[in-house]
Length: 219
Length: 113
Image (cartoon, rainbow over all chains, first blue to last red; front, side):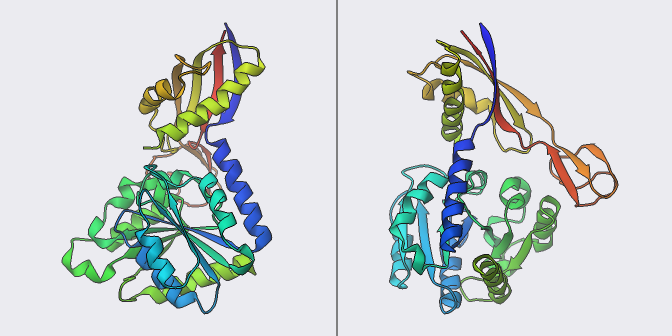
């Protein structure tokens, strides 16, 4: 019997690939945005809103992550935006390796910002870096105001929290201050927005922030 | 939910190291997992038993050492444990802190033969 000291990060290979993705996108001057949230939180709707508002300013591409099917990719494709559907065949999150495999399908010289719509899930996607420059976590009003406390890692590691479907607040017991306070406790640098992706209410602050972040990244 | 990715990561980290040392079999794999890492150690052994079939790690026992979260406060100099849910200095409430422990997520050592 013998003891071997190894000290190796368990997800080191994902981190390594994430760095490779980051390096390639830096060379190509592309900003990668990881969009996360529960199923039905409004990830696709928010991406559609971003496309409508920022397509005149940036050249946009989208990777749509889903466990099965290509409903979301078809929606984005109809908007005339380069989109690739990533099917995880059951996996609960996207890994850096999957993004790396998707990148050759885009003309990266003709893209300024690539949005990755992650799998609808508040748990696992937060643990896997995919080479992103920015993380956006969406929490919609009907999901409830306790979700930041229940799924802390998602909100601890994100750059922005978008409270979506904010127009539905009168119909739910949703304490937005509780959400914001618990998010800031976990993540003092977080940006918090109250938005309706569907009708555009409150979206202007978020879009302006996002636009600034992208511009800063691609110079 | 992604214990499979984790167990594959453990095998990728452990097997080549064991082989490098000429080991025929891995008996025990010791992990160090921080309280803020989001990993549920209880599930890992079950998945590991399946993912390791056919490798030299098959049948190995997974031992987990949990590491509590700790910080260094840049404002008041507090050094020590924090509550898992509030990533702030427990003494002065400052957010200008450096996490010194709690995010660990690695294979520390192996017992082989």
